[in-house]
Image: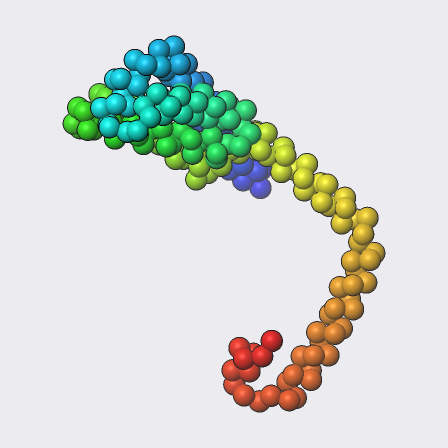
Length: 185
């Protein structure tokens, strides 16, 4: 029991925290470097791909790296931040392959950021995140609201179950067709 509580839950969520924070902290400076000389970045990386609006797309790439990194670090909107990073890394990997071929030295860092973002999208932020705190707060609010109206809800549920049981008894008596449950509402 103790093994399953600490090993599977706490360590796994701590690993998600480390993955999120390190990915965000190490990637954020790439976005700021793009902003330092946005025209140079547009000339070197966006224009060779013949994409429209190269300066605008350069700002989008920088913004997704900076914004996505902060979302990963804080753990707020984590999957959205990881999706922004994943999109930017996809274009960066495409650029590296188109301009330099399959050069592992150019692709390794991009592939690591891609894999980190993809893993975060699939696994989520873990319990050490603002997303988890919001989830707990919203669940507690909904439980509080349900507890206020629980007496009324219990009465409605008991009345509904009585009606459904009466309908099912009458329904069984009236239809003997084998697929009647699929045909009637």
